[in-house]
Length: 120
View 1: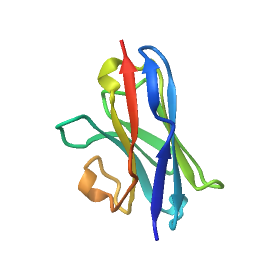
View 2 (view 1 turned 135 degrees about the vertical axis):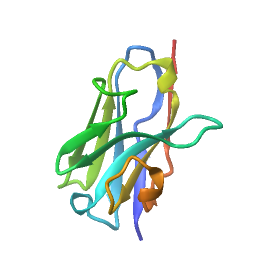
View 3 (view 1 turned 90 degrees about the vertical axis):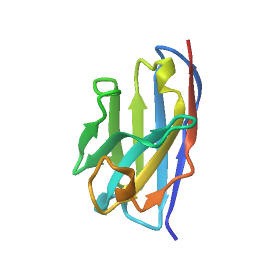
């Protein structure tokens, strides 16, 4: 059974940094495409970042402020966001799938999400 479990969310002040973690089981992240998405209340999931072959691809909203990485030995992936803004407030999800894409339907496996709240 595949499980993705996010952690690291919380309440932070604008300008702070946060690192989100995603622990995977039931699949090997080095053999699959992994990504981060976010969802704001009442909105659809939005692409944040993806990593494939150690190369990150980022949404314009976080480009230059975010870094996505994987630790194959720990079967985990990470998303660090610096200079957080109130508009970064959302539930952040990790996802895994066989197709690299910025579209959420491309990913078969999802975590439960972790809330990030940025206060001004």
